Image 1 (cartoon, rainbow, N blue to C red):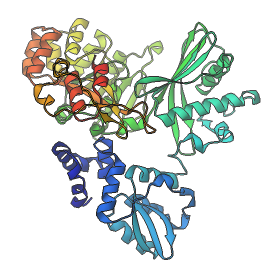
Image 2 (cartoon, helix red, strand yellow; image 1 turned 180 degrees about the horizontal axis):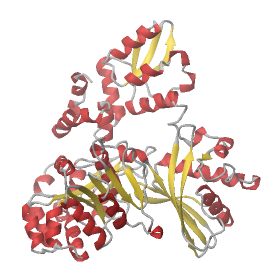
Image 3 (cartoon, rainbow, N blue to C red; image 1 turned 60 degrees about the horizontal axis):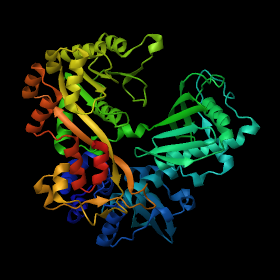
Image 4 (tube, one colour; image 1 turned 180 degrees about the vertical axis):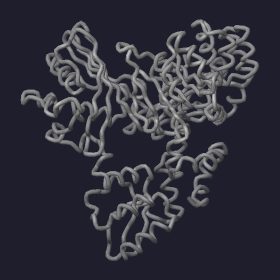
Length: 562
């Protein structure tokens, strides 16, 4: 992209954001306006309108364009995808094309040469433009709004078949057709809303369906309680589970075919309760593993520490936090950075949530005798370069992982602790000798996920808390000098003032001073105090930086860092 395009944005960004845009945006391979929108610095529409005014190119909101009306004769799929532009309509001998970068003339020249028409640009938001291109070229694959499906189409959404099942096995009876449509509608609604989990919960006189959106559960529907058995049966059929077994928990998966090219994976867990089977479904979003490290929310120093640890040929990187804090995405992001043809990478996971091309993933199966420790032993006999262990749960797994890290392998894993310093004492309490911890662990990342404020509706707090309360919270006096706090409001674009989540991290490298303290079997408090002296931000301090940037609210940081 020409340098002039970046300079368009500078007047609206802080010095830190300007430097980030110049240094990091080229690595992301997306339009500058998309990068700014992803970072939540400015609304994308505002950025595009500024470009439109500056270059006197009309702005067009693609939400109001009938994509079906675009003639196939002017699409030129290869050119459109190459330049990320979309031909919209012909007026006489002039072809109008939507673009996010109106100063790049290569698309206009190529289309003019290919079609023989004069070409004029209109400005569009890059995110909407990319989605429109996918819809036109991939058979509406990217458009998953419920309004696009009538009941007959919802009935025809397929569950992808496994090799060991007949294709007609899950065909519903005529009496179950309304249940099929209802379940399909619920699943599509969850995808549309960006939910991570779906809860189907039976009670004595009611039935409740809830979605977890941005980490918070919301009640979505309350169908009649007498449908409990039929809803559970349909979900179990889709998941390839035993319908007759209602006394034991079961685990399964669903691959839901939305269109000919688009499928969504769900992990399904059933649990017998007093009034029926509770079913929880986790949406497995493979795109989250491909976000790239810049989208996760690391501060510049934290990102550098993580990349430096990944670049080492050996050692152990540990990611810690509660369930649902984004540990898996952090590990997968690291694996994607390391995933090259020159490296042999193996993972042991329970369960394998997302398939990663080029990485050997092993599903742990305790019933068959395949544990984390057993998988790890096998890895070490298969010439590995990098090993990921889904979780270190016991001394045996910890000892094998540490041995691997000490013998020329890079090991990534997770533990369930509340902070980076507590991770070290947890290993000590497992029975791992202190000298083994000090010599093998190179980096510990503790993390949480905080909800992002919606850029469309967030507003400055009219009456912020007193300075003494903010200092008690963790702010410094210098930070209070120019502080603007924002609060959630709520609008059509978000969920109660929040949209999406961002990571809050404590990234602690194991320096020589911390190694010495580990060797002396220092406790978690002593290690945390030493890390503070070495300028390691804890979770609360990292969260405060997100508040200062206007990314999230004070209440949200208080909630996730407690």
